[in-house]
Image 1 (cartoon, rainbow, N blue to C red):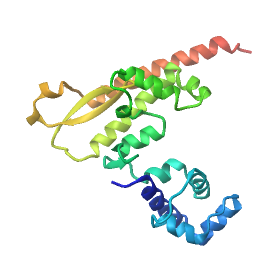
Image 2: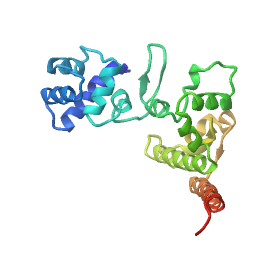
Image 3: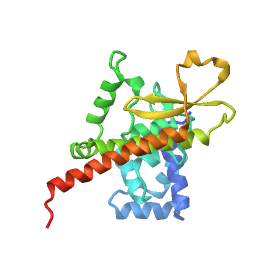
Amino acid sequence: MTTPSDRVGRSVAELRKSRGLTAQQLSDRLDQLGHRIAQSSISKIETGKRTVDADDLVALAVALRTTPNRLLFGAHAGTNGVALTPTVATTGHRAWAWANGEFPLVSTYPKEMSEGEIVDDFSQHTRPVDFRLRRSHPAARSARRLAALIDNLIMFLTSDGADTELDYLPVPGDTPTFRRRDPALGRAQLEMVDVDPAAVVTQALRRTNLEVEELIGEADRVIPSE
């Protein structure tokens, strides 16, 4: 399981090469941005012999035309373990969702907090206030729910275990998910219900459509016609 420093070094090397830059050229670009990192230091970062601080991380992301998250979590999310601290780890998909402000690290919250409380707390302390106001509209929430559903279905269909059955499970924040269920384990143990994925997606699409129609209706009431 790689550490954040390992992942940053690997990502810098991958992106530098994909951009067709030498270590010296990357160093020159950083110098132009006002954050000097010598060519020798870049090589040490890429080989894990030098860690990066917050200033380094942001400057490298700007220089490589990417984001700090991409440097921290790599090109592939997947289901492999990702270490966040020496005692906290999660999957690649969960790490990206957390870093993007989409889903909390539930295991880091007090056990007495409910799922709804955790999601609300995470939302309040993750994004700027104006972002939250826009995202709180029912149409925005419905669209995110639909996108998350489709994304999860794609991940399910492209993962291993095609011989197992499909189950649908709502998770914190009303974000639906599909999981593979081994029939040998027995359905009572998992307490899930088999569903038609096309029907689930269609239902979510209809819900989103209604919310968007309502949003357009709100705009018609607020903005007078000429």
